[in-house]
Each structure stands twice: as C-alpha cells, then as structure tokens.
Image (tube, rainbow, N blue to C red):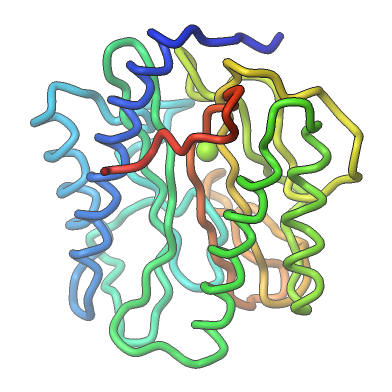
Length: 250
Ligand code: MG
C-alpha cells in the first residue's frame, strides 16, 4: 500500500532528510586513507543523535551499525569495522538514514578515498548522473517504470550494469514502504506517481555484471565478479510542481 504524505508530513520528512544529508556529508569528509569504517560510523551516529534524531539503520532487521559502509566491490550493506582501514584509491559507498519527528530520510553517496583511478571516477560520475536522471523522471503522472528506465538506459549506454536484486523504495514513517523502485524497467509501466509520494531513488551500478552475492554475515552484498560498484541515493517527494529532493542539506 502506497502511503501519501500531506504537505505537513513532507515538511517533517524534509527535516529528517536534512539531518540524513548532513550526516552523510560529515561521513564523506572523514573518508581518507588510514581511517577505519567504524570511525566513520561513529561520526554518523554522533551527529544524528546530537540533532535529537535516531540513526534509521541501527538495529533495523538486526543491522549492527548506524551507516552501511561498502568499499570497492561491496555493493551495499557493508558493516563498519575497526579492522577495515580505508586505503588510497578506494571507493566508499556510505548509506545513512535518520529518523526525526516520526519520519525517515534515506540517502547514500560514493566517496573517493584520496586519488582514485579514472575508471573508478567514471563509475562514480555515471552512477551519480543516473540518480539525477531517475529523479528527473519522478514526475506526477509518470510511472515507477519511467524512473527505472531512465536510470537503466543511462547506465547501460555507458557499458555498466544496474543491480537487479535490490531496489529503491517508498519512505515515510517506515524506512521501507511501498512501492519498490527498481533501477531498471519499462516506460509507462508500474505504479503511477502521485503528489504526496515519497520515494528513495538509489541506483546501484556495477562496473561489470549486475549479479551480486551476499556474504555469510547475511548483510555484506558484493559484486559476483569482484568488480567495483557505486551507489547514490536521495529521498524524493513527488509534488504537483515536480520532484523535490528531501535529503538536501540546503
Ligand atoms: Mg534506501
């Protein structure tokens, strides 16, 4: 069931989104060689709690940390660890959610650790651009498939692939609501986008095959072929005046 939000509720979601975005930016500033992913997680948790909000992911389905931190071939759901020390050239996907005034904000970004290869940079650029292609398609009257089509066609034209096994989702009082928002699809297919919907659009883009597998910890999701993967996400409201990014710090 898709839950539509009132203007008042979207205002609260924007407040939650702003905290999520600032926490993510702080995490990104901390990405540098020699830092552990657990240190970055602590920065995220501290910032969110200082705002009187709660980290959405902490304890969600048993997830043991506040941020998912996924390095290089890890697609999503990487578990922060003091043993994982970032190195020059790593790409670091950080996914952060904050729960505030009864609503969640959810966003992710892939950061470069020091200097990265040209190929890695191209993957980051393409994934980020595909997110904004998806957001452009998130207009009232369009359908969910239009978003997936926009992301997929942008990515595949550049010879990368979109992950099939995980999708974006509705966001609101619950972190994951209907509808699911796949990063692939057909124009004109799926649920109709209506003003008041809030969705997380989150392309996960692999340098090689779209296939992924989940490690024995039941969270860490890696590319099946070991190649790099990137992840960019915003929470977006569908309005009569077009898409509005709720996870926007400004
Ligand atoms: Mg999400």
